Length: 397
Image (cartoon, rainbow, N blue to C red; front, side, top):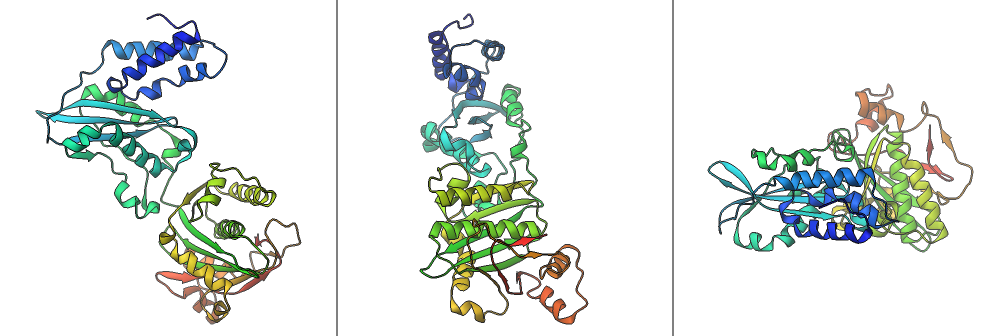
């Protein structure tokens, strides 16, 4: 086949690739230059030509697929790139690993913005649908140390994917592309802070709950009483903003922000559009605060996994919250998006500094009372202690 010269010839090329998909390792990842050409005025670029020649080279000596036997164990290897998910179904014969089927599918719409663990799960779903007959006739072993099963109940437990090497030379192409140094996939999970937030609204006042889990497993709880009218979505945004401010004050650089609000998380991740003016302001402020961290990932979780933050938010909005002595309840009289004067707390005098110092290096304050507060609840769950009233956004320097 000669290099395509028209849009129609490029369409023929992509159609043939689709027909050969099952024989080609990560076929979709070999096609982006062709798809790009179809979306604009036809231009056969050097990138297109290089991809075309590489595809021809691959097809000149493709690996032979091996038919499986009913009931034998099959191994499924998953891969994720910036543009697609892929899978390779493998069988073993005389200690040799032989490919049975390749699967590849490009991301569409919001799929490319899924969290890493969801992309891996998505790859498994795509493979199970396209290889249904194999899943029904054979035991399938998913070859990855990514805790897919565990993450269904506890998404924050997911670490980065580390691939298991495939021994067969015929699968070298799959493994080579499988381990591309994608910076988004190798984020260091060791120093990650997990912040769960929730917001509840009422006619006169609402509440915000924040539960922070440090990299060492310490749990900190913080509540905010909203003394202004707020919708449910505004309360959810206030919770996320409070979490970001506390994360900044505690010196965190790598955050995982979790909320059970699908709409708010979807807007922050760009999956939904913020049309209302106030929502646009909240979104702008949220994105501004995220720039102060090295890594911030937003994840929507089920309400059942967010009960801690939900409980704190309800306490913050109720009269009973005043009676809880080991929970910091901040009073916020104005929405964060309003441009009003704020109280600036100097770091040396901040009520949080003794707690931060104790968490970071174990130093206790000289004051006996402050020392008791810093060590309250150690080990395990600890609450930020001193109530604080503000006239606007929490600002710590």
